[in-house]
Image 1 (tube, rainbow, N blue to C red):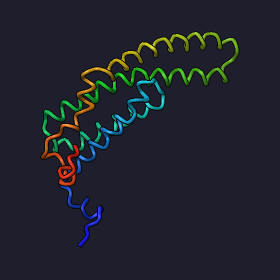
Image 2: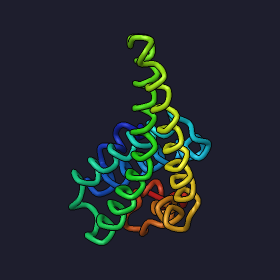
Image 3: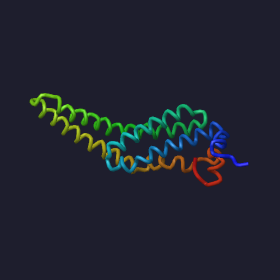
Length: 165
């Protein structure tokens, strides 16, 4: 008898499902890394959204991982969110101010442009901090967190294929 994927998915334990979901969400964060390192507005936004999703999943499945694993992963996610937030918040402010140039009276334009210039300078600084973080050892540890998961955290299929959860 052949078991299709949907039937084998039903046999996952809650812990196996949690580890698979956390791993997929982790990969969604990492998938935005190259764009974020280049300063891409969309990649930074998408990476931030993926972090929020992983933090929610981590909270919902806290009982499926050890306290130390939960604390370590949540700490990494918080730090990364702070670095991304520092850049993203400025992107949103700049975009809003640029759009206001079309609706504000002409006498306001120079003041708005000056503010945009100052915000872009702050964004460059915040981006340098983000880029440095994405290239440091702490982020590398976060990045590999699911690569080195314990064998008991892996699904049977992943054990057979040598894949991390």
